[in-house]
Image (tube, rainbow, N blue to C red):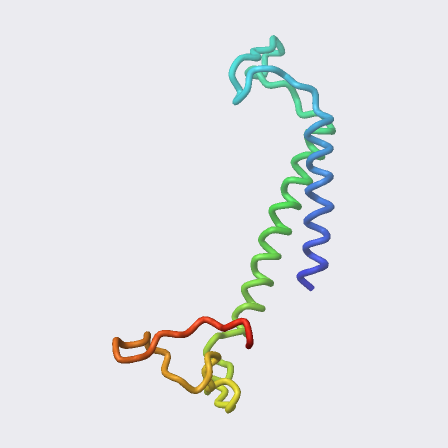
Length: 120
């Protein structure tokens, strides 16, 4: 189910990008400037592309919320503590990769390793 919502979310994101890029720039970022002389307070009526942008934006937010709810429900079923907590005690896992000797560094009494000779 989350894959279907994710595909819908991606389609809505692409549609939202296209509709934003199709809109005409009115200048004055963040609502600064513009004034207009239409007597309605400075903002012209919304164009059909602007209404479509609002529609895609609302759909995008709804899809995000739906995906979050579905993901949280799926994650609630999985838990680290619900699995098997007993470690595997195979003989292969308990052996040292260095062999049977001690893993401690050599002491002063131990003989240093001799380099191989040409006859070896």
